[in-house]
Length: 211
Image (cartoon, rainbow, N blue to C red):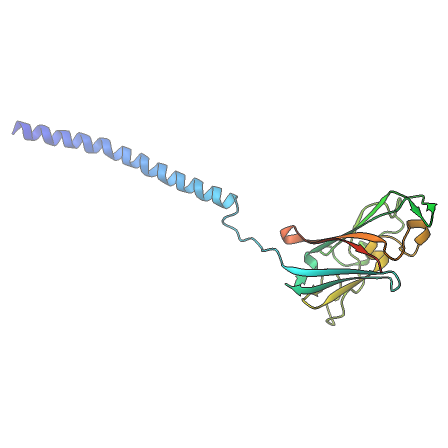
């Protein structure tokens, strides 16, 4: 009988010791799970990410027509509100065997589809230092006639097989007709970069020669 009583007492002591240990372990497991979930969401696992679009683009510059055209040859539809177009031009040191005043300088202009297409966001040609002052713009000129509405950059969709067109001077960020000032002629090279804003993906990045 004595032995039996001692055994019961031993089991009671062991059970009371195990219960707190199990409680601590459960709390530890819960804490680890919560921490893992927080880290996962902080790392972006809990959010959806937009896939970069796939599109084959072509850019053409026409000095005679005074226009610039971007064509979506094939691929995904590109809402122009998601596009950022940057055009850069290096003024040659000489043109027609004459040294240019701004030779060696670079003109950079960005058209941001995320900006509201209004006159207030147009290229400022009266700005001190123009056109060598970097500007980010989006004016209210028609770029697409595919639909009756939504014809402005930032509103229109560049669907596969369609194109959008800009005034060349606006697109380039300066008066391209001033050939003797900036060294513009057929074959002159511009660099055009187009970025898909939501994914920060470069979808076009090439030198384009004016025609």
